[in-house]
Length: 304
Image (cartoon, rainbow, N blue to C red; front, side, top):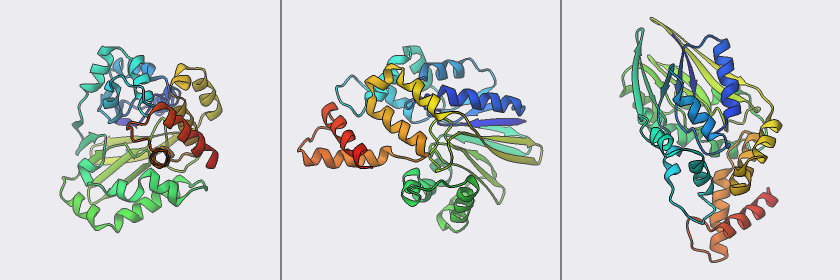
C-alpha cells in the first residue's frame, strides 16, 4: 500500500491541491491527514469540504481545531480563529471536533500509529531540540537544504538518551505525526518515525514549497520518500489579500506571509514582543486588545 501523509494544512487549499495532484501522479492509494486543517490561509471551508468527501482518507484531529469554538470577543489575538469559525457550518465544526486523536492500522508486517503530536510516542524531544522557533534562532537568515536539516535531526536523535529510552518503551512499528511544521523521518531499531512537515505553513528553513511524505508498505518492505511540491508564493499571497480574512485578521495574515517568505516561525517572536509591549504601556488585558495587538505588530514589523 502506498500512503500520502499530509499534515498542518492551515487553510492553504492551494498547497493541498498541489500535493494531492503530486500524490496521485505518484500512485498514492490512501491519504493520511495528521491534523491542523484551519488557521493560516483563508480557504478553510474548501479544505474541510475536501476532507469530508474523501473516501480514501484516514483523518486525525489537530490542536488548531479547538480554537474554532473561541467565544465572541473584541481582542486581536483570536480574531483569526473566530474568522475561520465563521467560514464553517456548525456541522463542519462538529465534524472536526469529533475526529479521533489517534488511529492505529496494520499493513503487512507493520503496525502504523497516527496522531498529531510526536510527544505521545517519544516525549518532548522534537520540540525540545528542533522546534521551529529554535530553528529560526539557529538559522536566522540562511536557507537550509532538507538534506542538511535531516542530517542534523538524525544526529540529534542518535545522541539523545531521552529519545533512545522513550523509543525503547514503545512497540516496533511506524509512527506518524505532524505539528512541528518540520519535515523529517528516522528509522531505528525497528521503529520508523515520520513527520511530513506542514503542507500549508512550512517552517523548516527550506525553500518555499508544500512538503508531504510518501510511505510504501509491502509485507516486510518499507520505503519513505519525502517530497516538496513547488508553487508560486506570490500568487498565494495575492489571493489571500483578496479575502475578508486579510481585512479582519490583518496581523495574523501578515505574519503568515512572513512565514511563507522565509519558511520560518515568526508568530512566537511576535507574541513575545506583544507581551513586552503590552506590559510597557500598562495594558494587562489578555488576550491582547485589538489596539494593543495592532500597535505591537506595527512596531515589531518595523524593527525586523
